[in-house]
Image (cartoon, rainbow, N blue to C red; front, top):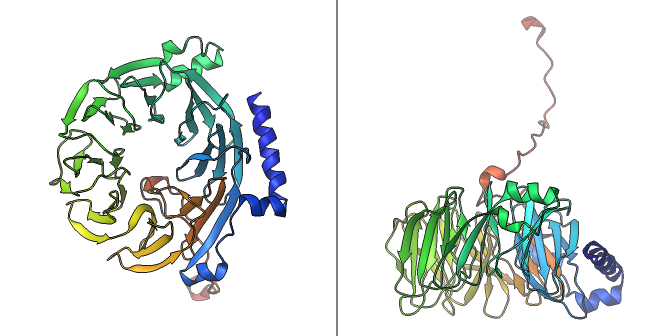
Length: 414
């Protein structure tokens, strides 16, 4: 039934895409080529997520280096090739508008929690790989490493499930009845865990509303360290490619901490923001972009915590290239900033594309309308994306032959 519904909606979106009247009703005008030319940008691609246009909106958008995912309020999940916009697959996973998490992916799988079920889908083909029943209502999106998947729940727990065991039981048609057999461990805190954990293969790090961050071993949940803050942790934990973790606390502290994920050591003096931080900081190389509520955007030096520059009236980091930072301002424009000093280089009126993602993985800029119209922009010079968070995943670039004609062999050397 789920596959039939997904196919039905997929066909309906394709039909709507061929109707100029429906296009104008569902999709705002794309930015003009001459406007993008002014800033050295091009429309990399645009497409439409599957949803019921009479009642659905986009609930969450997530991305990795290869695939862009859009989840609707009605539980429709659409996957697109992140680089060319080709729609890869559509799934209708929810029943009766069950709450769905954002999508988390690794090299092969895309995970999404819907109601009390966790689904694993082949990231590229859309084939259902497995599903398992969760012991309690999830409060976070799932995350995974090479061996396990981790989910926070409303009772303050974080559960670990064995990926290999899940697949074995699913192939034997023993799931969801025997879902309990896939559980490796449970770690319980006194209050809910509301943001997804961070994992590095060795340690699982998560924050609870009890004002503490916990790091436990991935294998057997042994406590590595517990960081007890004086104020509630106010934003999702964030990390950098160097293994640094960034944690923001709310009133009355309003501080930003940087610690080593493996041992909890503080790496620089906490940065005193003075305003609440509710969005996860984003690290691009040595630059950390922090956007407090009504506090503009700070660019901090990752190794030291020193402030490099501050820009008022910025509300969200969107993407960055080697020279330009793309961000949202208070009225919804996309602002272009000089990465070196924060100077304003220009702005784009993309206010109707109000669903935005903070892309810390590549230099692509993605914006979406509430009705599922997706637009990807890139700089003209960057035909191939730069990989920031996982540079080792970048494919090998093709080598081109020289334009100069080959030299004739010297007969004297024969």
